Image 1 (tube, helix red, strand yellow):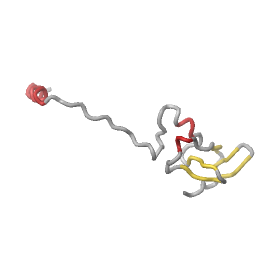
Image 2 (cartoon, helix red, strand yellow):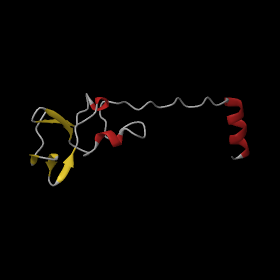
Image 3 (cartoon, one colour):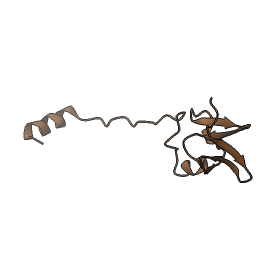
Image 4 (cartoon, one colour):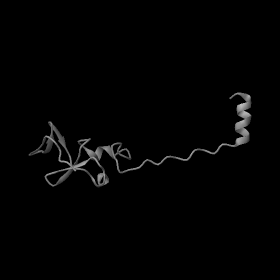
Length: 87
């Protein structure tokens, strides 16, 4: 892992290019975007990682795999009748 570039420790926390960043939460552990700076882990893509997980899954998370639902089974007889009708 590489350190955050242009990161500066201030009284308010860690700032990267003028943007205050917050430490990652436990759901972020294992993600490829997590970077270490002075003993704490930060997200290299989003300044407030906790907000990304509010809606369910963080869209930047590289360690979470998306579950794809299986395709619905189609009755071959009905499919052939639909094809014959032109639908």
